[in-house]
Length: 358
Image 1: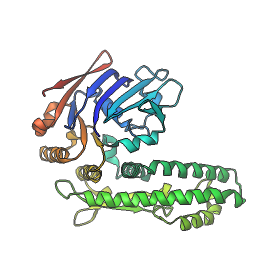
Image 2 (image 1 turned 180 degrees about the horizontal axis):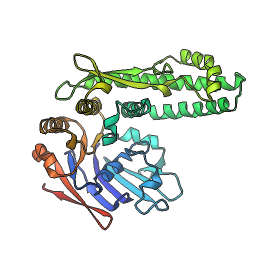
Image 3 (image 1 turned 180 degrees about the vertical axis):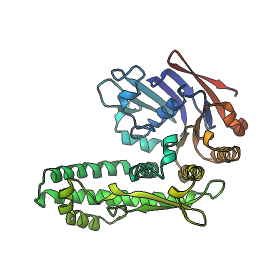
Image 4 (image 1 turned 90 degrees about the vertical axis):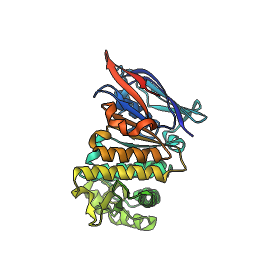
């Protein structure tokens, strides 16, 4: 299954865009602010969640919060629509039938790397946990449903804690739900880390040893019984804090690389970037039997010529579609004829696109 067409209406800086796609990488270039990243963001909205910018739907409308937008895509034999109308939740349709957002994850795996993620190894654990869960979701589509089940039960438990409810009977059913869903979440995360580790090729980008760190909440526990016991034992402390202090929502991602097992957080900026690229490429390789789209925003500008060439070789070898952005066509010269090129400009507040070459 391949993403063959993308149509935008009133999304970000695009009044209208109709773009045909094929298996070749698409290099999108143009000045800053011209609307390149908006194309990548639109593709990312074909995955569950808020996309690569994590923006609320009203903020994505070209004409403002009181307007709407529409994204339509052709994916194999399927037509996929995601629509945001004013003052209504975003809706998703597959072949004109309304579905939950989680259904998108079963059709297409979308991976992305954006400049804000360059700080991943120095950001708080929450950022690495989101990254890990996007990786896990790409490999295990049920991960989104498990996360929703866990979060719903935890919100109910937190409400009891804030209201200082001390009766154990109020907690048992919620903690049982959290334990079952939380154990499954943790197993998915551990299996995802194993798959990504096995898919690293150790070539021009550093291979890493990846670990699920327990943080303060023993968040690497895959056993529902011990999770439930710990939640019960932690009630007095949780009552004092007014929230749940143990569980998979406290997990962190650890990474070490090289013969010296250098922690990612202590590596140079360049090596941290290379490590992120290694993980994204490995994620795509681990999904070789699934339809995958890889979104790389402004990635070329942060690499020297040799690493750009190595990246383009790796991308061209992937069983995935790839969209990349950069400020100028020279950044993509090493692709040669393997990639299509799309020039994006902006005039009178509207983005425009023209394909360059064949």
